[in-house]
Image (cartoon, rainbow, N blue to C red; front, side):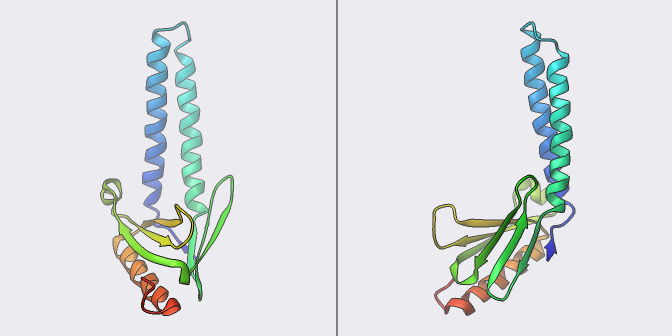
Length: 152
């Protein structure tokens, strides 16, 4: 099983910090105009920060993927464990993506689009740009081999 790059924790922990800051700021502003004690939104933001950081660290620890003989297999989840097997013959196309934040920490994602229901795509975050490109090309090649030249 392949793990994600440890730098993905920076993004996930950063999101938790920003979310807690926004909740704390809005709560503090609302508390100053109401009779709610100012300590409450600060305490709630602090709790949100602790839970968010813990969730980010557990999310990283529980995220794995593997390319098997006939499928792409993923395991992820903190409270709910999700296991996904994407048959190679169902892959329609594969993208590599780098958001601004991912570029900031030197990471990329690979997105696998599958035939089937709406929203049937799988995203593998926390890869180096080279690993994301290599994974994209490998999945493309395997999908073509699994389904013929029309696969991707």
